[in-house]
Image (tube, rainbow, N blue to C red):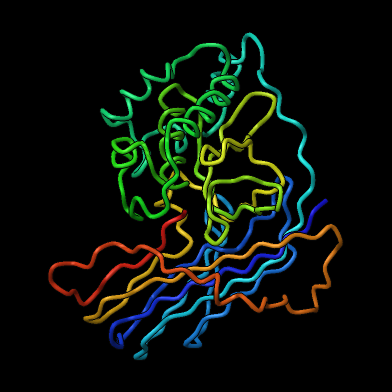
Length: 327
């Protein structure tokens, strides 16, 4: 059993004061599968009243509105998560797995995770990659997932901020580079192409001293879950060539990034904005004291990085969208 302490800071700085901000936040870790969220708090500055609800997939969404003038918006989410060890995932499922998968899909409600979605769709470039990687109904579904998870890791370079929050998968396919958000979308589209239900997972990855992940430790993370017979939903992380296990902390599930961005909002005013993000995940083998505040590291300010935001419109708008990419 492991316990994780997560602190996630998001700061929007405006070129001049804006009149209003409205924001949705998806930073509350889920309590399901092998994971349980023991505590969660959300702080917002300027101070405001925060509301919350759960969507049809069980994701926690916090939302708020700041009607007064302000020059920046700061959001700090803190959580404590308990993780139980997961059973080992085999290399294959054996003969008949494709038929078993089709029977389960026919009996269940998986259409959302099989149809094309906003960022995970079968473009011409995606179909060329499917032919190159022989993404077809061969071997068994689990063997195919293991193989594509590894091939995307080997065939695509991880380049931080090489794409934007709203980049279609064709940009990463063209350059053979991207960030976790891109790798997840590409793998989801490939797997749905052969009838494997696949969903996008937003969350965090704990980076230990002996782990050699290529994704950054100071940002949110994204990976994939595929539905398989006998195993249920299994996580794959093509950014790091991993099967998602006890280091992966899940906050939200959806068809793709459009369903589960860590932050999504609008501001009213004529101003450019800069986005700064910092994430810190620490681990412990002992149960935490939930009455004690999480320690703030002395170098916390050093973790804050300027994130790449969508380019401003040619003409300033009164209502401008703002969100953060998953690296």
